[in-house]
Image (cartoon, rainbow, N blue to C red; front, side, top):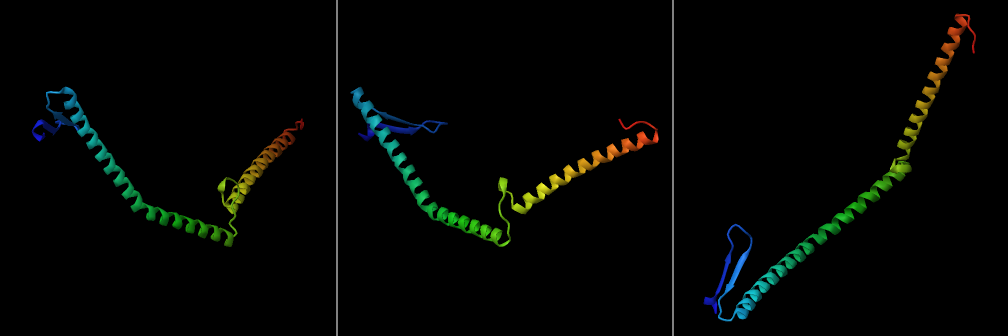
Length: 134
């Protein structure tokens, strides 16, 4: 039976060819297809075993990293509580958020001051030129 079977790699591809010589074409096709199916199943099983081994290997690492993340998050929360750094809107630290609000208020006050100075300058010019304040 081995002398009727020919299996070889197809050049410049990742495919293999399976040939089986028989006077019965159905038998030849069944044998070649059976060998191909067995080969595919063995490759699939090997891949599943490899994936399972990788998962088993990585599971403790993943669990360790998850624990380290939880510990780090707990330390950050403890530091924030100890330093009175509470979280405000947009995940900003409250003092940072307050600083941003104060900066916005300062900008608004500066704009109001500039408008008032411009208005006062207009009044001064009008009075100097003897004009009305209309």
